[in-house]
Image: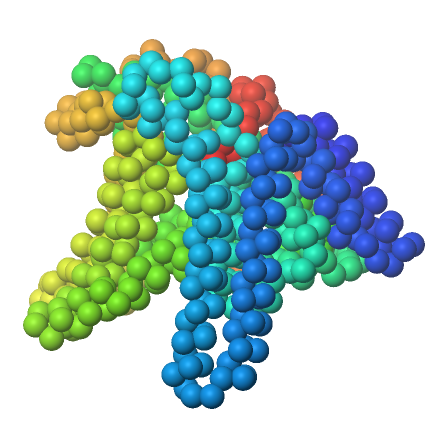
Amino acid sequence: MQFYSLAFVIFITVAIAAYYAIGRFVGKGQWIVLLCASIAFYAFSGWQNLIFIGTTALTIWLSGLAFAHFEALSKEARKAAGSREEKKAIKEHYRFYKRLVLVAALIINFGILGYIKYAEVLVGYIVPNSHWTSGILLPLGISFYTFQTVSYAIDTYNAKYDPERNFAKYLLFASWFPQLIQGPINRFDLLAQQLFEPHSFSAHEARGAFLQICYGALKKFAVANLLLLTIDPIIAHIDPSIPGSVVVIGILFYAIYQYADFSGGIDMALGFSRLFGIHMSPNFRQPYFSISLGDFWRRWHITLGAWMRDYVFYPFALLPGIKRWSKWLSAHCGRHLGRTLPAGIANILVFFLVGLWHGAESHFILWGLYNGIVIAASDLLTPLWDRMNKALHIDVGGKGHHVFAIIRTFIVVNIGWYFDLIEGVGNLNIAFSNTLFNFRPDLALAAIKSYVPHNAIIGLALASIVCIVIFVVSVLKENDRDVSERVLAAPAVVRGLIYGMMIVAIATSFVFAPAGGFMYANF
């Protein structure tokens, strides 16, 4: 059930009506409506998928209860203990059992995710044309809800908060339907209370939610879908004859397409959640205004980056062996190297996993490693950049340097998109080689006309106009202007005009391109 389908419109209308009716006339139990709606939404994608999300929710929920149980036994036993050494031994004894439960939960859930998501690709590498794993269907949102529930397991293991005792409530956290298609990856301590507490209908909140949904749909349908009509034919024609200029155009369009599709879908998900008075975590913050690749990844897919930071980067960087190595490097090679080299290794590990999260294909792994290595190298070379800026008398705090840093980062990010988009090492070599040595901008227009359908070229005009609107909105938001509140505070005629133009642009896009699903729906 896609966000743009008539079935979804009927579904969410009924869900909203039931939710606020229960709140007004019964006064409690609104969360049960959300749970029923979430189960119905997920069952619509295939009832078999309920088995997977149910297994994940149950095993993680039980692990949280087990952690609390062992922690309670530990505290009770330590009260009766005499010496400090005895208390320490008791604590370690029960920590061992907690660790066993955590490892079992991680193996079960990452095992399910790994088998479903990677078995076919990995078996294909070993046994080409194998049918052993053919027919495996990826349950909707399995990567997102697996990461979200695993964060709960790790947090309750570390006693960050008390585990949820009610399985039905925990199942709602795991299956909250707006997040299932493509995230964001929410945290229990930020989302759960909102799901369980009562909400009254707010007209202002509903208007803000509707505006966010429309803006997300504008990005998805009037930009992403229209650009895809040009991107696909270009990538399909990667061969030695393709001009490098055409490859660059395809990559630039892909950069815009990815942002419009992913952030547009997230805007719609956040908006649908807001219709129930529930605010999920933001996932994008003007990423193409970043001044470094590290900054980019703090603005793009924010919840995945935060997940990797908290559950991979820091645990790895704080391993006893890594800490000892860091101290040794600081003592023998200087504090900068002692700090940045272990962090660089951790970043490479993180982005290797981010690449793997996207898929087991080699181009995703290369894309992840590219990002990790560039960030690690940038941190290691910071003293060199500082000396160069000082020697050249560059004002790094000036607006000119800020604009330069944004353009530089955009170029670095787009080099990475080569790895993300283009499959096969041979095709990658052709794309990079022709970009550098066979650019031929004079052939670009003729090549694109031969590759791309005529209706796609016309659709690009609409996408270009909408891109200008998105750029202006992004500039305003980057300068801390609350665009949404300004629109909502505008006179009714102005608001109607804005909504009308968005709806017309979205409707017009369907003339040139089919609605199509979201690119991250299969993750």
